[in-house]
Image 1 (spheres, rainbow, N blue to C red):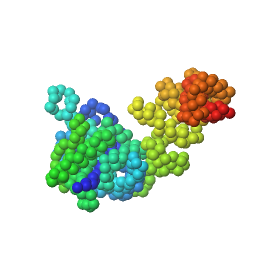
Image 2: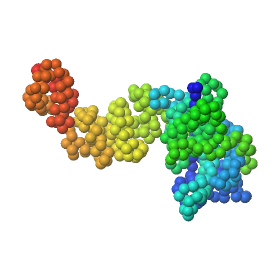
Image 3: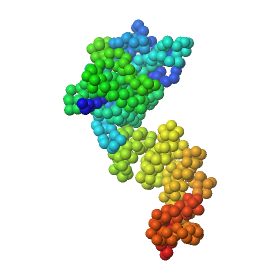
Image 4: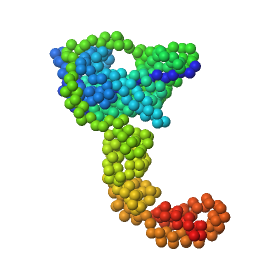
Length: 482
């Protein structure tokens, strides 16, 4: 049997507000446990929630960025369930009437294919607290602590259509949403701190069948690598069950990174299990055009639009344009380099090559680059005016990264200027030819591969400083006996 994988993602992104969605308590990460949970977050008797306008504005910005319907009227509901880190016994969320309706995003896959993924909805809700199973002070092992600092933190839950057919597509979609929420400034997207968490719904069905299979939900995945591995494991697990004649159970599962496996947590709840009903303490949320325009008037050029523009305006491949628009800061860095050096393709090659490798090695993003846009443009300028060769430029870049110096300073201090004096290059070549009569005879007898030998000797003698184009031209003439 050939099986088709069907994947949908529910992404919880923490909105970058200073206070919680229904209270004035702080949302800063890293505070001592239970120091940022106020009476409203705990649902103590007599308190009332008050909606955070900033959270609504950020939800609207996201809706506009994915071309979604923004509801003029949405409703908050109580989602009832009991868990140790849910102090009120219910979570305030949105159910039937979310603030953001249907939209879509484009993903670019590794093979260059572009696919559109539908977004079903995005709704506002409050986060729960956090259960601490490990490193709980004084536990002596086997105990769990509850930190309610996160209770009431504003979340935007982004629910996709079941449009993904492989783990690679799911990861590309998750990365796209992550890119977008950071791009438009609604979330820092810090996965290590829990600002961006993914729940994956996955099922299998026979190829050609329209009806969906029974799905499992994998909860709280906090890295793209874990998302890939969890889905790969689950595909194999469900395939084995189905091919052995068994039935996949609808359930919630957890990915255990240490064992690289998913394991069952509980049976999967349906919506009616949560007994949703409109929250009696919150009025319906009504948005007019003026509010929506005010929340979105300063949206930057969006990633897809910028990617298409980079490809058209600068003659870049879709792949290069995608890398350069991975973040708004990276896109701005690229355009700052191009503005100074005037060569978009050379700038793209250096940013996607040497700079990207250095950032990756030091685990930095572009904001933490050791080489500024102006400095990289300065290096490219020295290549353009033949002060240094492309090969020497890599040495210069490495020194710039290590020392924080500009290209001219490094070139001068290390004596790396390219030799462009044709007389000096010619004299060097004459000496090398005279010192290698055997190789000269073989070359002239038809062994043309020896041309590389002579080039190597010239570059060795010049310590890599001789202009390669001049070396090739002069050497060809000399070897031909001209």
